[in-house]
Length: 409
Image 1 (tube, rainbow, N blue to C red):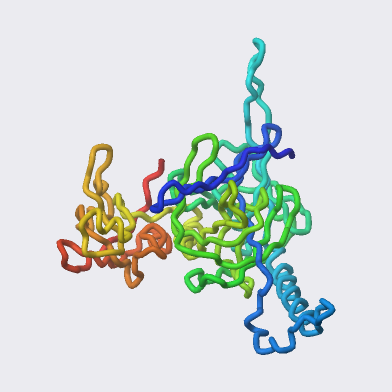
Image 2 (image 1 turned 135 degrees about the vertical axis):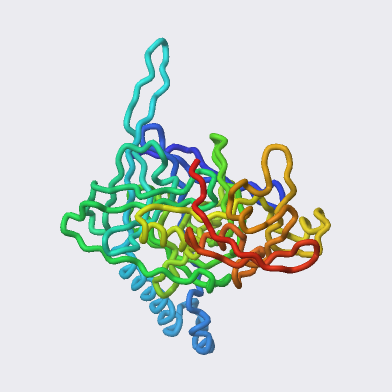
């Protein structure tokens, strides 16, 4: 499976939303788009825990590492090893075959051929439901199979659903139908809202589409990032509220888990910064996917809850531009040619939302630079009723909205 030189890269044209390039594609002989992410940790992973013994951690004048230093390194290595052993069996390689057409030359007709690509996924139920990225299993694929950590290939795999191409959540769900006698251990999902900058993380994935269960480690470098991911083919995807992590990037890691030091999934690896950037990767917080997980497990299909508004996430600059006293929230921008601010028949219209309203909370969750409206709504499921705190004409009030399934494209 060859890899070509096409690389998705990140550029930052404006302060409001940096443009993030998506990841490399597999070559014409091998593949479809795969965004990938792996995190890499710097030295000092547990340094705080051992900080009280810093007086024993002096390097001798000869340059040799002291016994205390070796003990810290051993403990850090053991922790990562334990996480890998616990998480690894639940991480799978996702193998995809799709149809492609070669260009015709010198009067020859274009030829159809099979192309293969590979990504990563992880098991979330004992009956074989898997989470991965949407771009790992794009529309138009012929077959999907998964390879377990022990090398067993399972080829009876169903795509339960994938988010739409315009959705900021790059998510798809698979289901293993034929287990061949294998038992599955689901990964435990953590609380991504508890993660802070500097917290340690470990990622496991299918590096380069061929090296299974490659383990890297790193830290959370930032959160609440809004980005545009695009490739040389001109396609663009918007990512909202993603984690930034220092990352050793390998093709094939898309859809893999980013876990905390307890081995709990707190993110789904999704994209990298390219160009001259070093060790910058991005992962979707697992809390933002909870609503989708609930719909798949309860209904067997993917339903994305939505309000049906066109909005901007307020910053100081936007608040000044729109002459608003409210500095944070989701501002429903006035209608303009090409699109209504509130979709007709949507939950937003039924709830009584209007143009120029600012949604500041969903239930008790504030809408700000760390939690966009889209990401917060992703934590709920279709048919749930939420309380919206809004500011209208300078006055705060609350409205009730019952979320509905987003229209399919």
